[in-house]
Picture 1 (cartoon, rainbow, N blue to C red):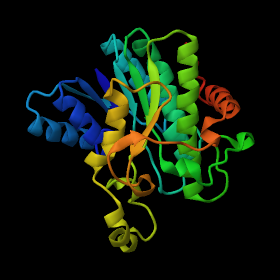
Picture 2: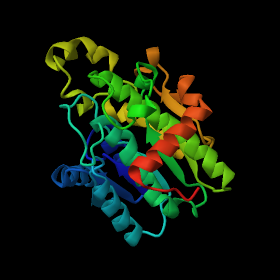
Picture 3: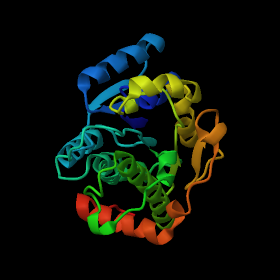
Picture 4: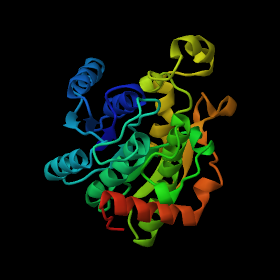
Length: 287
């Protein structure tokens, strides 16, 4: 039983499609139910009888996160796989419903709360996994100012995105450490899709001009989803690992273990991020 956020399009849709095609029950957790319904139809057109459930989820609203997690917890006794895939990049400057900077609020804090609220459905399940989708952008201009954590730190949207993707990795490593300490059978891993053909750049300035230039460097959303799928299903994968494409600068290719920045491996930063995230979301983990 798998739950995939942002499963209505792009890498999330391809992740859900692949899992459903191999017989998993898949919950598509999406902000837009109309687009989610279209995704369900597309998967069922390819895989007749696919076991799919649509769940409304707006990661930019902690109320929505709590309501969606409650609905899933009431309906399902177990979760084998939680894929934290949804994300925003270049989007009009705004705050989440709770006053957080939109990228950190959606990409990290929303998923942090979401994972914490669903963890009781994962921890009792042998072999269960939490896979959080990060990005190679975690390496660039991504220093987190904890005095301003959760709010805008300058005007650069690229830097804000990089901070949120660094947060994804810090969260994964700290969650894994806590799961091990608790003796839980669940493991936490991370992946990044490389530069895949999705709608995440639709608000990027000048995308119509840039797209023909970057097109040859990108791969399909289906290829981008392979890193997530390997982290989710490879029997040899272990907690704390990070998967990405094997091509030039990890922009495209097949999924392999990839390194992450020294900052993402900083245990003190991992703990600080965890504490700050718990304080802002008011979600306490059981590990």
